[in-house]
Length: 178
Image (tube, rainbow, N blue to C red; front, side):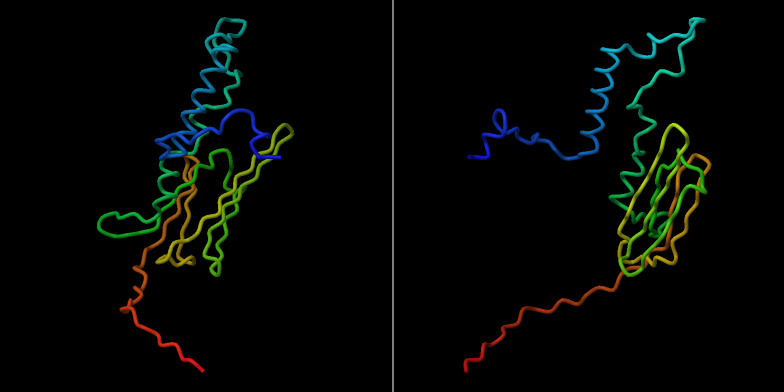
C-alpha cells in the first residue's frame, strides 16, 4: 500500500513566500473572520431591542486577542539596546489574568523562564503558558518582572557579553598503527 493512497489529491506545496508564520496565521484568521461575518452577519446585524448594536455578539478572532507584535518580536529578539546599554527585555500579554493568577519561575540549570497563568470561573477556564530559554549573557537571578496596568508582563535584566571561545587553527591528528 503506497502512502499516496491515504491522501486525496496531489500533495500541496508550501507557499513560495513562507517567511513569517505568524503573519500568515494572522492573515488566515482575518479571512476566517470575514467569512464568518459574511455567513452569520457581523456586529452591524446584531442589534438589541432598542436598535443599539449588541455588545454580546461573539467574535472569536478579534485583534485584541492576538499576541502583540511586540511580544512576537521580542521572543525572537530578546536582547535590545537602549541608550547604548544592552539588556534582556521581554513582554507578554496576560490581560485576561490578575497578578495573583500568574506564576513565574526560573530554572538556572536548564536556563529557562516559565510563565504560567490560570483562571477559572463557573463558565470558562483560561490558561496561559510560556517557557523561554534564557539567552547566554543573562543571569536568571537578575531578571525583574513588572505587571503593568495594561495587562502586560514586562521582564528585564542586564546583559553581560558572554565570554568568547578562542578558536584555534585546525590541527592534524596522527593515527597510530599497532
